[in-house]
Image 1: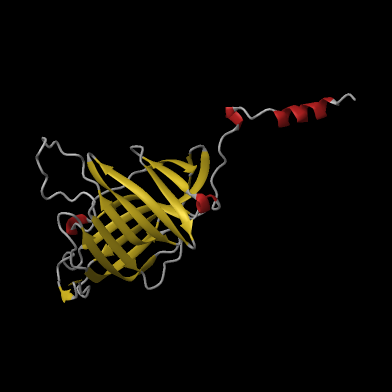
Image 2 (image 1 turned 180 degrees about the vertical axis):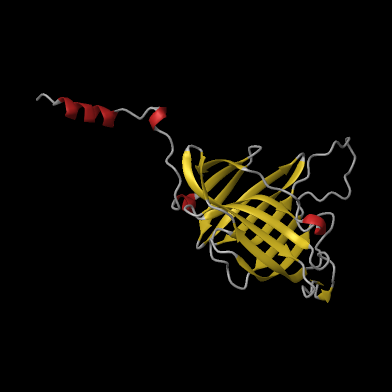
Length: 245
């Protein structure tokens, strides 16, 4: 039996693997988040985002010279930070044999919870109050008294745009969150009133810039600062790559 040219071409196509030029990874979708999305940021660090129920878990390494930290975040609805667990990573010190480092805090942890009374809807500006708590522990400091209080919060959405990352076009929307200490923030330290522990009234406790991918269902922190209160280290990097994890 003689195969028609078109049938022969189809059989050859099925038998031959795709060349690299045609074997590129497909662009990401919201489904990709179920198995995980790898986000490469400036400097080459890779963050991983993965869906868990209606929320998203993020694993974020933040190198800073020889030091830095890693953060495990829970992003409610893929966007709002409701849990931030950080582990410090101190660089190796140049100790001579037999010397001991006293006062280091490698492996120290800080866990901060942010409780929204109601979650802001994606795409809509929001203002309100939220409760927060913080626990710290580490080899040099031991367990620290819990800090609790309430702060004013503002969530603002900036103009939407379409950008090309890793060869694919994605809709993005920058989101800015600002937390501010107020006169009635009522901060406590292990239950005892501790005014001023998180800064003076009307002082910004934290500012955070995120890039929200509405079609993918998650947001990446590209800038965060604790300002004068020292609530958070200044960190954040721009996005240079997206891929399935």
